[in-house]
Each structure stands twice: as C-alpha cells, then as structure tokens.
Length: 273
Image (tube, rainbow, N blue to C red; front, side, top):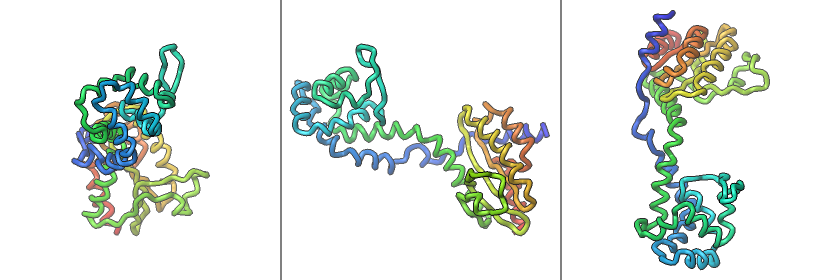
C-alpha cells in the first residue's frame, strides 16, 4: 500500500490549465458593460485640473455615477474601512456627497490618476482591473477544467455518463438523511453504478484536508450497497501539502485515481458495458 501511494504521489501532474483557464473574458465584458454608463459619465473628471470643482458639478448633475467608485480601486463590494478617526465606515459612505467623493479620491490616490491624463477612458481602465480580479476565480476554474477533462476522456472512450447527478436519483441510497449530495458524474454499467467526484488542486490549503476527510466518510456510505461504488478522481501537486490526509483517504477508499491512473478505471468500465 505504501509503495502504491508513493507511486500515486509521484504521478500527480503539475498543471491542468488550458489557455482558457487564465481569464474569462466574457465575464469581464459583462461586468464592464453593467457599469459602462456610470464609467463614461465619470470620464468627465479625467484631466480636470480643478478636480474638486468638477466633482461637485458632476455630483449635482448625476450623483448615481459615483456608486461605482469602489471598482476603481479593485474592490467589488461595499467593504468596511477605517476613517481618520479610527471609526469603521463603508466605502459607499463616501459616495453620499460631493465633498466625501472628493475626499475618497484624494485619500485613495485616484485624484492623481484622474489629473495626470495617463488614463483616457475609465471603461478601458476598468476592463484591465476586471481582468486582474478575474484571476481570483482561477481556483474554481481549476476544478471545472478537471471536470471538462474527465468528460472528454469519457467521450473519447465512448463511455456513457451523466453529469451533475443528485443521489436522490437512486432511491436505494438512503443513508444521506435530508442532505442532497450531487456527484460530478455517474456511470451505470451492467455490473454497478459508479458515483464519481473529481477535483484538482494546484495549491494547498485547509480545504484539501476537508475534502479528503469528507470523501473518506462518503465512500463507505455508498460502497455498502452492492450495486454502487464511489470513485474519486483527483490530481494536482497541491496535495503534497496535505499528503497525510490524502494517504488516509487513499487507504480507506478502494478506488482513487489521478489522471495518470485513470485509464485503469476506463478499461474496467469498458469490460462492464
């Protein structure tokens, strides 16, 4: 078992990133489009030497356009901050008057950005910010990439499967209580129904321990039924930071695969179709 687990670790891949992993440009465009009117109104402030007077004039014309100022400092939400008195306020509190807007611009440094004329269009500026913020979604895309990769492998090998399958589809599974468990894939053969979870971790973190622990608990709930089997397909060198928990899961879950060993499972399925 030790040698087998050591082999499993040595086979973990360095990446599952494809070129569409890095930025979701469609999502970026949607985010920019939602606030494009306000951004174009704020363009009026660009290059104004008397920025304070321009802010007052624009605020009088349309105060609502300032509601998007938080995204100009790469913050999506109305997060709390400390004011000069050490009191907790929220970013949107600064958007309630022209004086506060100007204070916000000065204290964030945006006043210099507006005055120096290096930015010609705030919509283009925000597009760049959204691209940067979208990198925060890469962890989720890593998991989605794994699902896509597994689905392609199943398709290539002509293995019929269903994706995003709730356990309630199988009334035999009665040991989940009121919780509804959704599996990434389900494959039904003449021998068994395989309920499959997939994930990929480039980096470490406490989540890996939680995932390994939860699947260690989940597997026997499924495997107690003769016609069902739990399959875990996972990969990524993030597991080196949680290899003890992974080894525990590897020991207790009969069928754990990575991308390198997945063909073993594929061949098993082919014999049962």
